[in-house]
Image (cartoon, rainbow, N blue to C red; front, side):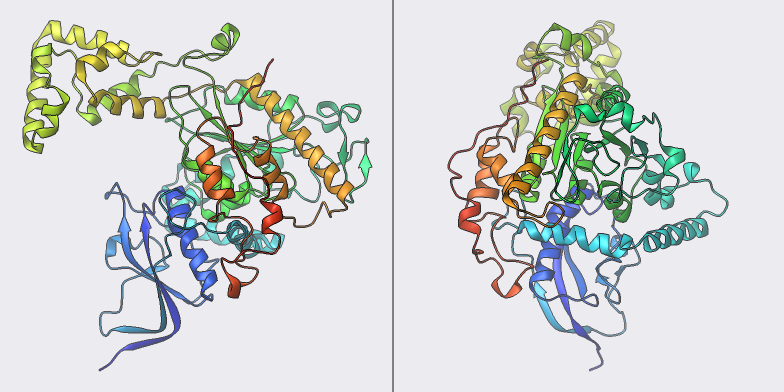
Length: 561
């Protein structure tokens, strides 16, 4: 019998929502990468996507894989799943056989539904491998940009970048990024192509970061009070979203951070960003500020040490998620949630600074999407228990009759408008919850998650100044202990923050830190890429690294002004 034979290993895996960066990365790519590292994958290995699970079957997506594979391909079973040149259907003329197959990914990830953890060093290896492939030298990065633009021009001849279609999206985040205080940032912070023309609000380091107010250990570990080009404050990355979860006062936050002397990098991924470009933008970011969402997943590309990286999620007081607390805890990253309204303000001044943004457009869109009808008399509203017993068809018929009633009744339309204003208000409208039942919570969940929000600028800036102080203390401790402050280090500083209850905030952190840091299943202190023969076994330093991790408390965003 005729067959195609490939003298390589094929890794059989599944993907969840491959068009969603963070789901693809943490629930798909990282478990796959970990498995490949453990079982000796090469640049010529193959993949077989045996399963794909998604909540939106109308969307396609894929991420470039050139940095991991040279001659290998990913076999998929439908034309719809071919998103890049890396995917391919199996040959039609004959079966294809491989020397070896590794089936499954071992139920490993940072989230609580996985049985096992991925060692933290595997995430670092993933980041370093991408860096090595794309910008090991300045010329290599320039070659990547040139090749990307050639591909763009071939697909969209004569098109301008800002007007181009999705095929240009991988470079749009580079074009839109804005830089502040990056002039002469030193050897650890490369100058992006065109950065000088793109940089806005430039301040002189001598003005914004005076030597008499600043002390930092220089690259050779010696103490210095004199300001130098290499001794600069933290790099703060800010990600803007639009229209969902837009940060309404992002420029105010930029101005506050710049005035405090920080280097600030403003970014947007809404128009698209390739994997290489995402990693490149985050490569020198020490503090990442972003509304909660997919883009926070890019924190995997932040530097691992010097200092311990920190994520600040800009949430609202009605809605916050734990998803990225899980991923941050295995990456050795501190995580803080900061909310400025729309209720439970710290004081009246804060309320004035962060007024509630009543987003009618989002509210109308969600009501239509969820087929939720307001303005009904009690006689037309079924109890929750009865609605759960209805068939799909009966429920659709009921909603159709409700819409028809409101449309034909002036009084019902006026009531619907009043209820709508109450529904999208700053406080939970318990009267409507009582009237319409559990269904209304689905609206609240999506509405509060998606509405624009304000950052509490003075507190976020002061909190970041506290991170700067932590950084200087970390370096002082390293110098005192005789550690090489420029070389690779263990995760001991991050574990120390866990001990001091300064690693995860503001709520529900105990179970996350217990699972990912302190348990027998910890992502820390186990062999992985350092010795694949002992993969998963404890290292000699594990016991000392994780000693005295007994209880866990939330890190509070308690920043008095």
